[in-house]
Image (cartoon, rainbow, N blue to C red; front, top):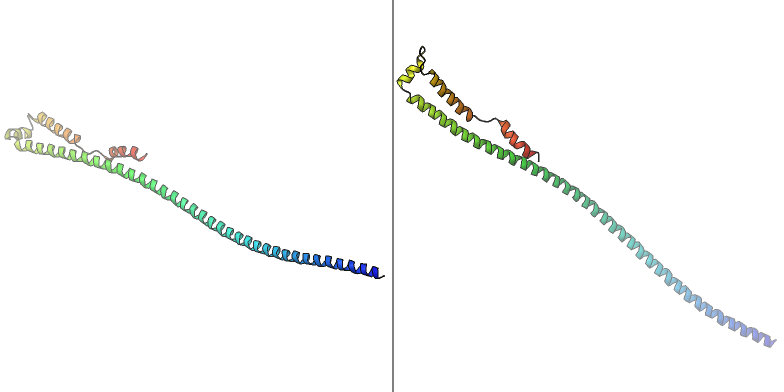
Amino acid sequence: MVKSLTAERDAAKAESAKLSEELQELEQLKKAHSAAVAAKEQISSELSAQRNSNGEVRERLEKANARLSELIEKHKEVSQAKAELQTQLATLNATKQATEQQLSVCDTHNVKLYEAAKELLERYENKGALASVLQNEALLQFNSVEMETIVQEYEDKLNAGKYQKQSEADSAVIPASSQ
């Protein structure tokens, strides 16, 4: 019986030693588990921080894209306005050039008209007494054909120097503005 008790005692000691080792191992596993849980919580908090950071970056990116879209739209509007202004400028330049040409023609015609009127006055002042009598001669009308020829000549000179109406200037401007 002593042998059996000794054997049981030895077996109990062995089992106690084995349980003690398993207890130490369990303690180590608990520590490892606690460390793993702490690491998991730390990684979770870092992941959450990264998600927040990504959200902020995404939000900033969306705002930047929206601003870029606005700027592109404004650039299109400004470009269109610039093109319209350039078209208007080209039209105004063409109109200005046509007006300058017309004024030049008017100036030339004015000089011709002045010269024709001056020549007419000189002829009138230099006509002799006989020409005055013959002009007023109702019965014989010796010089009436000659006077009509002179009058017709001056009318032709005046008509040649007459101011051209706006329609000629408009026809010069229309092709330039349609471009």
